[in-house]
Length: 205
Image 1 (cartoon, one colour):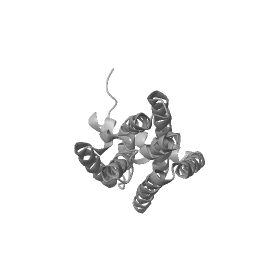
Image 2: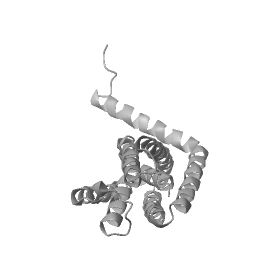
Image 3: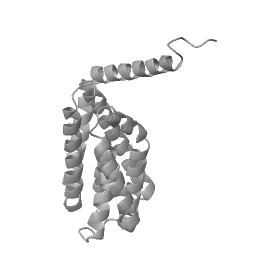
């Protein structure tokens, strides 16, 4: 069977929580649940690092504004992780060249990452923290559920991931005004900090 559906699904999930994808796939392979998981993801050191980083993300992802800073820092990490996982899956399967697989996984991860980051910006225009917690929990459960389902039924899981990606893009477009509001507020805070650092005066020159 072609590995493309699993590559697409892992890419979508990596854009939301790359560490969870590495951890889940590695555990599925190490425990014998799936024989399609590359050995590189099953290594003990990889699982430990992924577990620690997953816990860090689980905390940062639930704190208003910290989540957006975390997302910004992972703009490169998540797509790169999605590409690497996809290439490893393709290499293990042999049904798809690693380079096209990496392109599929990386580009899908980038799209889902941008959807997540944009949605969080919109949520952060609300002063209460409960929206962030709810979004984070829903994302974690969604990633865990879809990735687990992909191990047993990759085609159906890929369809679900595609639908969720499209819905996410539509949601971000709908929330565009709130995202712009968040970006204006962030730019204003940066300007206030810069002015505070110069004693409240514009620097000479």
